[in-house]
Structure formats: C-alpha cells, structure tokens
Amino acid sequence: MNSDDNNSLLFDALNDTLTSIKINRHQNIAKVNLGFFNGLTWIEEFDLSDSSFMKFFFGKENHFLDKGIDEYVILEKENIICFNDENDKGYFEIDMIFERNRINGDLMIYDKPFSVSKKNSLKDFDELFSYKRDEFDLAVVGFNDTLKTYSADPSYMGFRWFLNQVPTDIDLGSYYIIGLAGIFKNRIEMDSTKYKDIIEFLDF
Image (cartoon, one colour):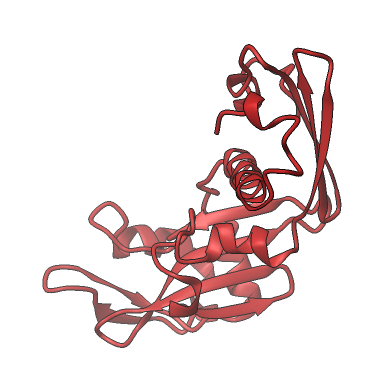
C-alpha cells in the first residue's frame, strides 16, 4: 500500500510536512516508510504477531469486537477463529469470525455472520441451508418473545460451506492502517527522544 493511490487512506493522511507513505508487508512484518518535505525518510517496523498489535484490535479498547476478548469463548480450527458470546438463554452466538486466506495470508472478517433478525429470519436460513440441512443438527429456539431462530451443531465441513454463503463485512485495509498508526503513536509517546527528528511533522 502506498499514498500514490488517491483513493487510499494513506493519501488522506498526507499533509504539508508528511509527503509520502508506503507500507510493505512480508509475512508478519510490516515496514512503514515515511517521507517528509525536507527529504528525511523514516522507516518503522511492526511485528504483526506481537501482543501490542493484537491488543489494539482485541483488547478492551478493541476496534472490532463488542467487548473485551477475554469475555468471549474462542474456538479455533485450521484457519478460522470464532468469537462466541453466550446470550441470556444459554445459547452461544457467533459475534465475529476471522478467516485467514490460505493462499495469500489475508484476513477476512465476518461480523455476526449468522445473526437472526427480522430481515434474516428462519425462512432466509432455510433457503441458505437448502440440501445441507442434515449437516447442521437444527432445532428451532426462541431468540426473543417475537422472533425464533435455529440453534445448530454443524459438522466442520458444513460450517465452512455455510460461511462461504455470507459476505465479509469489514474493510480490513482501513483497520490495518489505523492499527499501525495507533501503535506508532504509542511508541512516540513512550520514547519521544527516539522520534525527536520527526515528532513535529506528525499529526495523529
């Protein structure tokens, strides 16, 4: 990603002093290259597997989940992570799913992919399940006083198939940039001496 793309958030971050931004990722390492009006170039590295980066997204101040990560029951298998929230009826709802693309490593995010609502009723689920119904061990349960939905105990392959029927919901690129900026800001606040040459040129 780089600020040469006028439609990128990186382009929007430019100002009179910060004239270019490039982000290159190799596996779990992201390198951010900042160019300034006076010819100064600054390169900052981020370990995307580091706890500080993960905390930005999944801690109490997270930008993805409705609550802190330790308040969820988290199930992980292969390249899928499910964040499950127990409701007041004792059923677990899937609040969010992260799926890592096996080919390019990109992260796909599904926000409440199977949530019932007036616009996503039993009829809609029936159409989605179709001929795969036997793989889900379905039972009708009361979601609230006026709305019913299914509880399900799917096979893993059935679950993967059903997940492929719903769209991803989040522009991860935007959150990825916001995450890097947030951690960079924290680094500068912790060690202003190290960043004294560029601190006056940055506006978070």
